[in-house]
Image (cartoon, rainbow, N blue to C red):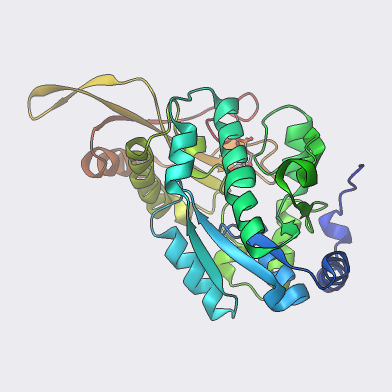
Length: 321
Ligand code: XMP
């Protein structure tokens, strides 16, 4: 299927919303649908569209995969509760960590997450609820990067030849697949989502596992989670497109309390970009970099080295995995 982009200059948010509500209602009919809300702008916009179209016939879940940022599940659930949208948290931490055990190859990690998400967790939720449809927030850039072979974005299914009905037992509806991120933000705003959602920096589908080089274990995710919190606190005021912390696999020698400490390395990235297809590192002040290094080494157990990535995309990518 050829997907045609709707450029932001051609987008009429109110019309688009009306049209998508109509489409979702007519596809789902009087059946049931489910969707996963991560709190990112894409899944938030789709959640609102779905609820406007289906009301209680859409069941929204927050999949707690153990890979999300600190406090995220509770924060997002209470934010949507205020908007009148009930969201159920599904604890799937064990399933994800079991699937990721021993895997170090980036594409194998993505595959493990895709299978756990769509086959195991959603397969089960769909069966239990009797839903026939999954609504999801795939956007135009996700399709482009996957088709170009840069990275397999975990939500891309049909475009890589997966028949979800056959393999997982449900059909997928993708209302924002023709939009890039900036257009999705317009839609999210027009849907009445708060600014903290429609202006949120992007966050990858595989969550913090996209920022752990090597094996993804609960302990290693906890390290990157703490580092992410610091990066977000220190860099949210920069207005940059995206900022993140990466945990490296190699250890390096450091010194702490006068003794050798063979410790962890955190890499910080901060990007200027419009649509994530190309990017340049933000020219952060030395004071900010210094503060990041000080906080990381004091507040994240085991970290003895902090670096800042100065590479453009391409040849770098935004995430590390
Ligand atoms: P990359 O790392 O490919 O990221 O330059 C481009 C943008 O997509 C976001 N993003 C993902 N990245 N796997 C990724 O590697 C995913 O499944 C995914 N989902 C979203 C990423 O954060 C960046 O903004």
